[in-house]
Amino acid sequence: MIHEVLAVGPLQCNCSILGDEASHEAIVVDPGGDISRIMAVLDRHGLTVKQILITHAHIDHIAGAARLKRLTGAPVLYNQNDVPLVKMMDEQAGWIGIPTPEVPAPDDTLEDGKVIAVTGISGSILHTPGHTEGSVCLYLPQESLLLAGDTLFAGSIGRTDLPGGDFHKIIRSIRERLMALPDKVRVLPGHGPRTNIGTEREDNPFLQN
Image 1 (tube, rainbow, N blue to C red):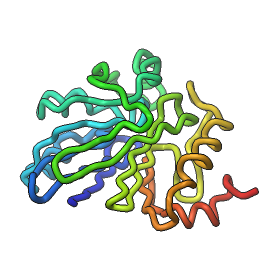
Image 2 (cartoon, helix red, strand yellow):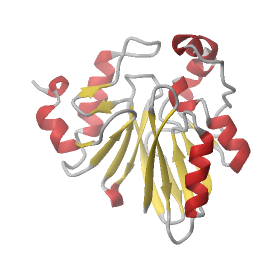
Image 3 (cartoon, helix red, strand yellow):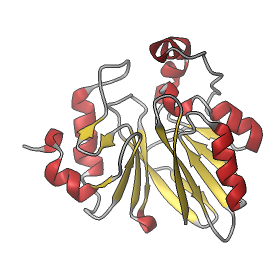
Image 4 (cartoon, one colour):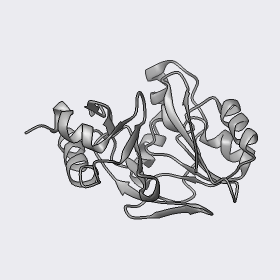
């Protein structure tokens, strides 16, 4: 599997491009900006985007989704519980001082357990509320890979002081959903360096008893 990660937008969101070498079908996760860079990677690998996944509807993860959809024709998927955040996109833009982006309504919702698949790549959605009500992670068991959005970071967790945030929910989501995964599962957070489940289980200060 092709997996390229671009730090995009003013907050350097980790955007994942997942592609199958044989079918050349792709999934783009969290296109928060810099769509020309994303398109360049897709073109370099000869990939066709079939799905655009958003782990949660904060502006830094979703701002480029409408443009990427126009360029590729791929549907945009995010959890319906984050629709209220989309409705306050102008306020979100004010938080970081950028123009309000166009943000499409979801073409489909990312419910817990939903299978995400293109030819050669398959994963499932884990609903992990806490950072936002609609926060999700994408788990690809064949790749031992978790795209964690802003739920889990290397040595930390997602902030819970923004609308829709809940500290107790995010801790429960991490403990019950993410810590149930094998230690070897590699974790790509929504920002910053990679980690793995085993390291976070042992060392993450938010998860110690």
